[in-house]
Image (cartoon, rainbow, N blue to C red; front, side, top):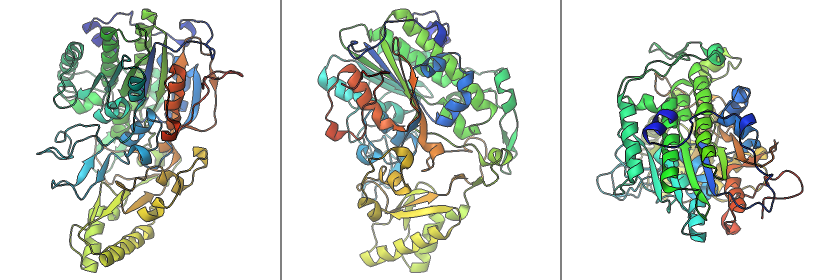
Length: 553
């Protein structure tokens, strides 16, 4: 898809994949080396450290190149709410969700005027006739409380260009920030931006090409030999659905399946390449920032799990697409630097886990449904309904604002007792407990459960209490095709992500000690010479130069 779309957009380049051993050479990067002219920040949604380790030996293209750079295989989205929006909010802000304000994909604000009290992390709920439902909200950056790398760059030099393109709006927005020159994401009709913002001519052209690709049907792809061992059908639930043998065939106009395929990542990469060329990013006297959010891995993980043939094919395709993208950049001769990470990890479906040596994996008990739990407690205590608001059987739980102080105390005690008594629940923690708990400064692999939850807790937005499920409990009950696996837990399979840095002439090394995605902002800012107020940053600069010199200036 990258090659086809790039050709349609007249993007210069050969389109060939360049493996690491044929990557262009350059003088060794030292502390005195000038800043790169272009920084490319890539987030691969749901690209866990486990997936990186599993497929690393199979990579021959773009990921192989990055794997020969500076590699932190134990990066952490250190917080507890390992969802897409909170994760993306950490990558280019240097802050935990407790400070970004992005505590979850959705939270509840019972004081808002509209009937729908659920708030989507990247919407403007103050606009009339909107709701938090997909396609019904107005995308916005309003809920992000801190500056992004692009914002800091613009403050230091307004001529610096910042462009953000992603599969999902929340990825483009949370990484792009408030001052991006162009910011857009994929929709069924191509590309879109904020309400009232017109796409540039290049983006409009890309949007038309992408819309045509979505409208066209796609035949099944050929199964690579590397993926043959994953080609096992796994039954899901009682609806006659199986996963594990998909080939990305789809009907024309099926946007969901388009997003859950390598085509989606190819569209974002090709659009990014076209915008870079049109804007001549990296060719001026400033350092520019190109942000790319690749979402297909997440859609595939949700729809078919992380260990089937579908994910195997996606990993190999992602490697090829990135190789093609880097080849086009190499042809320009621009001095560019790449950072690649993920917003969170992911967990495979319990049905396949039970086949593969983890018999305790299970789906969540429907008795933990918050609506049913809220109704039962309201009836027992004689309280008004609705009593409990939540986006699912775990995470933030909000009590009705209509309660008296005595009613609130009684309801909270009853909910805490009921959730704690369930065998699938690891812990229940109140907002009051978290408010009085400090944010940890220790290495993220040593964090306690309270440390993880506190890093996601914001007193203005978090729930009255939080529910944590036990490891390997998938918070999706009986499920059919489309949504069979997920993430969002406090456990390391959702927290651990790779953090990769590459630049021509940068000597590669691997540091297996735990680092955090909040370290990315100060690391990149130091490399490009953008001053930060470190009193506003949770992360620290990571030294990318092997040896006694340091890139942390």
